[in-house]
Length: 104
Image (cartoon, rainbow, N blue to C red; front, side, top):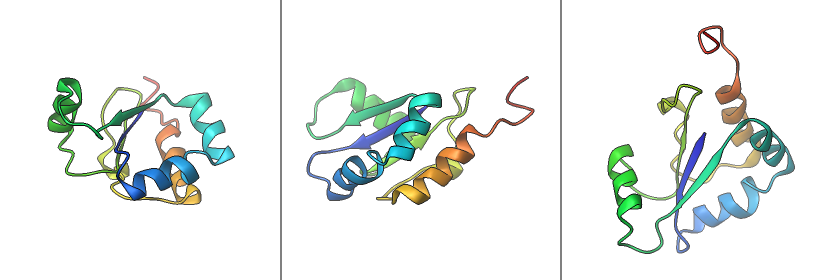
């Protein structure tokens, strides 16, 4: 699973939406194996969004969190800025790699 924290006023967030997340390879890879969730922080006051921001220590947007099959965040993959599609694909590939410990 991937959680994308973003806001309308955030230029790097828009770049992720318009460039990276629309890349055909990312669409294909994420659509087959990954659930993607977007948390829009444009407007204040959403209690659920505020709880998620606090729970995951979100300092700003964009922040993209990656979770393994057990629901644990892969801190090493956390993204806090725009990333071009080719580099984002590397993170996705690392996330979906099947490890023997994951299948147990």
